[in-house]
Amino acid sequence: MKTKTLKELRESRKKTQEESAKEFEITKEYLSMLERGERNPSDKLKVKMADFYNVSIYYIFLACDETKRLIEKQKVN
Image 1 (cartoon, rainbow, N blue to C red):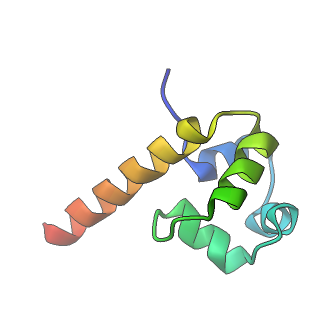
Image 2 (spheres, rainbow, N blue to C red; image 1 turned 60 degrees about the vertical axis):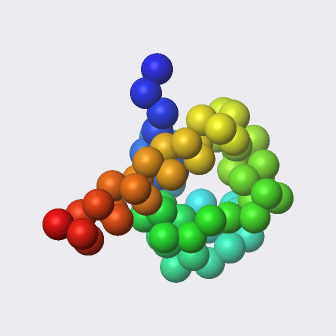
């Protein structure tokens, strides 16, 4: 099974960044950085997100780590 990024999970719920950020008690800007793999959330936030999307922490953040690696690879090229 392919893991989904935070953005894909959010969009599957038909939620805007603003709506999701409010749910997670973070700013829209911070959520945007998380979705792009530019920041690592606290363990508490990871649990909250996994519970909200009804998936494991591993399922979400394996995808985030992969996104971050791809972004770094693009910067090098």
